[in-house]
Image (cartoon, rainbow, N blue to C red; front, side):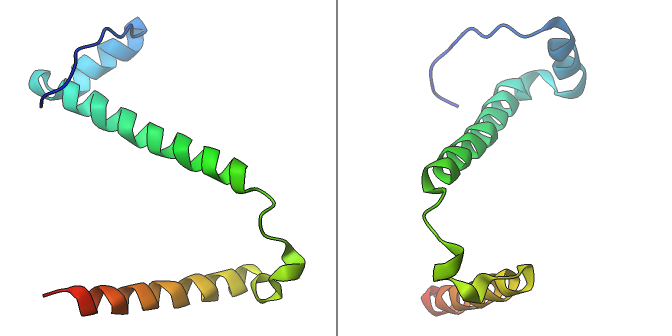
Length: 89
């Protein structure tokens, strides 16, 4: 893995557990992957905050219940799956 070095200060108990659970030559990758996952959640939360209120319930009566939402998402997933199948060699 190429990149930059940085210094990070861990609480003693966190570092102890990291050393116990993650083998020596895998710790950097583990920390990077964990950081990527957390950053992804933070980006999603920020996008959700920024998009809050963009849809009004009155504008989308077809999504009035949880069952309606599941049906809508299922329909989208089926379309995506069909499109993906068409693009595969």
